[in-house]
Amino acid sequence: MKKKPTSERVVRELTTDEQQRVELARAETEANREQILAEGRLRKRALELSREQVHRTLATLKAKRESLGMSLVDVEQKSGLKPSAISRLENDPEANPTLLTLQRYASAVGMLVVTEVESMTTSQ
Image (cartoon, rainbow, N blue to C red; front, side):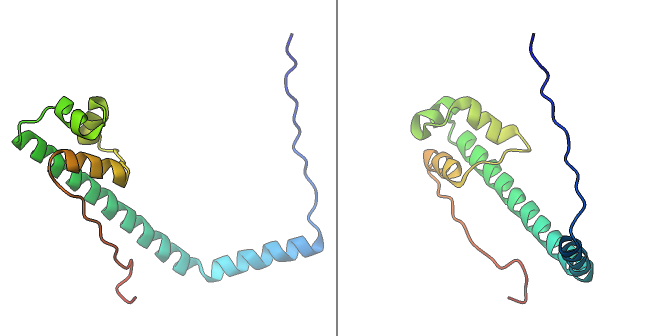
């Protein structure tokens, strides 16, 4: 019979130095709360915009594939991407392909993926 793994949480009191460091960290975090939240919102929006761009790119690639009359198997032969993977990219709203995958798909339908880098804030 297997023994159940036993684990007990070890709890110890913080030393005075550790307690002071925790309180200092909490105070610094609270003092910078609005800046931390603003940065988080900015990063979240940048991620959302990036995902929107990926989905627009995938829609463009699918439209190009269809306009060329290419099947998923045709794209597989030119890109090495499996038809199931291509279908998932085209239809899954949570698709998160790598740049290499986008480039392989684009190349298979005679297109290029062009990337740009922009500042997350207008003041930089």
